[in-house]
Image (cartoon, rainbow, N blue to C red; front, side, top):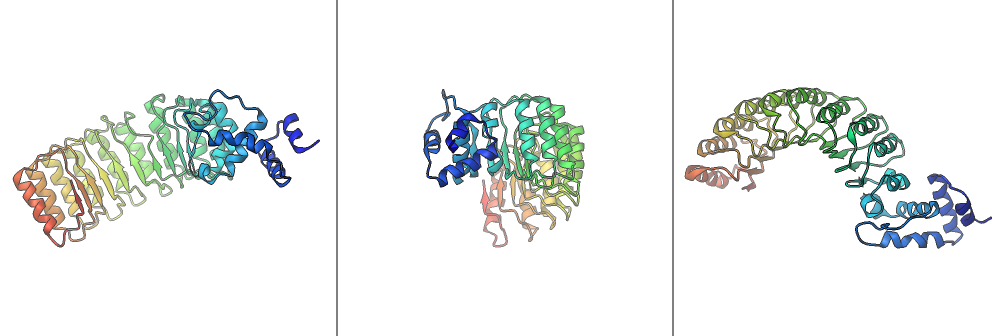
Length: 367
């Protein structure tokens, strides 16, 4: 019996399949590999649309993908078979790739169990995972969290799991994962955008950010209108903590006003702050809030490089406070400022025109 017959009569494990295909290649038998190469080279919504692969063909497809540098850099399940069966059959590829895009692939709780096992594997190379627009449900998030908390998990970036998960489970499980000692690799998370985050959730998140084992660098809390100033007060406690490493914070449409700006300015003034990018667009900060925020920008400990204040109800008074803050802080690292959608008036425009002409000003982009 030759190696091809083994494939036809048995259903070898993925690891055994790869070894057998290597043997076939060494014997110059490329028939099975050539058979599935057409699927890899195909174009369109799904390269396997309307096709039913045998176990042998699935194994051959896995072998081809594992030997493709392009696919392992950025693997998109949607290109092949957006289903739980496709995920299961191509799991060795998911484990071996750097980035797995699994959005809109009809995945459910069962897929989370599969992925949790993959994330827990010491042989996994996965660094980025996109699970957007799948019916994972609360039970699926619970299973996925177990993989994220595993000491072998190397994931650095996890993108949205949305729409079909209760808000309570979403932010509580996220905070739990961030605060565990095993979450040292996770640097970017977009689970909390538009999820009804409140003061209580912000308090739990602040505790997670204050953990000395947290490695989180990028946090998007946008479109949480329930966050408000009370949530900002809780969150700022974590942002100003010595152990917090967050560099990018997005807070668009969060109902933050003057009170929220006061505590945020205090966090920015902390010598332990790592924050470099801040987006507060579509919040009613008004001049009073911007004046308080400017106090943080004045502080020599402030490390902000990019600030977005798009449509924040700022007038000439607020612009004057911003200009003065940047002018009076020679160590300011601010390079980009977005103030579109506000009313600077003639005086505000002149102040910033003069500021940009100042040789000490480091602002490179103003819009």
